[in-house]
Image 1 (cartoon, one colour):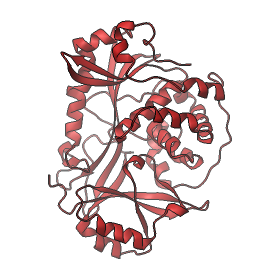
Image 2 (cartoon, helix red, strand yellow; image 1 turned 180 degrees about the horizontal axis):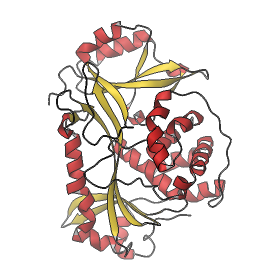
Image 3 (cartoon, one colour; image 1 turned 180 degrees about the vertical axis):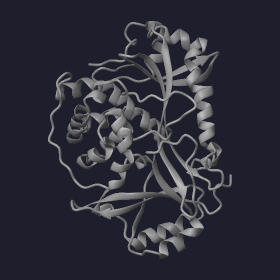
Image 4 (cartoon, one colour; image 1 turned 60 degrees about the horizontal axis):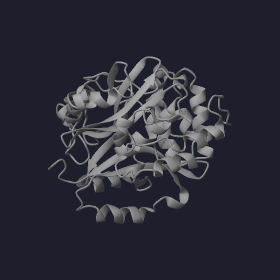
Amino acid sequence: MKAVAGQEKHQSAETYLASVWCCAGTFEFNKLVGSDSPLQCGRRIMGESWKWQQTNLGYAACMNLPYLGDLLPSLMHPAVRDLAWALLSPPLLSEAPAQQRHPLTVSRWAEHPEELADWLRLLDTQPGILEAWLAQRSIRRLGLYYERLWQFALCQAPDVDLLVANLPIRHGGHTLGEIDLLLRDREGVHHLELAVKFYLGLGDDSARHDRWLGPGSHDRLDIKLRRLCDHQLRLPSVPAAQLLLSELTSAPINSALWLGGYLFQPLASACSPPAGANPQHLSGRWLRHLDWPTFAESDHETVWQPLPRHAWLAPARVPWSAVWQRPDFDRWVIDVEGQRQAKMLVRLEEHADGHWLEQERLFLVPSTWPAR
């Protein structure tokens, strides 16, 4: 079993490390597939929206990882699809104010992408180990879910050692922050901060990072980048952190970030992406609630459906029995008019296998958005 290094040997850090997380479940999955042998699993290809393949094409090629659009049609289980999305979707930015580093940059999976693809397909046939892993901790926030998916994958990556995850740094009874990941690969030891974000652009001066807001209008791209660079990436240099980290590794620690997610442009006006945006970033549109009736009148046959927050990662794949009828959706639109929360909608089209697949996504925001 690949264990989190430091938990057995370094007893003085036990108070912190024992409460962080563990790799329970890794052994059972390794027994199933064989920890050292290449995985073999039949590949089933079904049609899925061309958009996802086209969007991820340049990023996957430069990383030598499987194309997300090629792989998703062969994956059925929602959590496995989310896992594939976390590993293979492009970052929001190609030019960031701090170093970006994909956690699998020099892994065997990056060099032999077919092994990663086969591992995901095999996991899709027996997802119980992933479900058990996710059930070990309460995951109420989407960001925590995203982190847990990454932790699971890094525990399984054949040549990456995950030393610790979600390590709280405390001093004087106060929590200074939390180190998301500390891993070791052949290039050294790396501290990585992970984030998945959904930002909506405002039409004017949209190249500015402060013009890209979260759906609740409190979070902003510039605020998140500042927090990452000025606080989270500097945590390993804090004396309280150095004491803990010295018990895990004596090697120099390189800090970097990885920022995934989607950028949403206003439906009614042109909006350029933020400065430094990745040309292959995933995208959608947004619309104020008061403008929905006019928008919806243009096509009564289009199938739109709200997407719950926990399902915001991978593109939706909905069984026909769960697809809303148009009258139900129209009533829902009326019911949420007075609510303050933005709602994620997906446009669905029926596929030959009977499932309905996401073709695009749209945030329906309150009519007064972004009023705080």
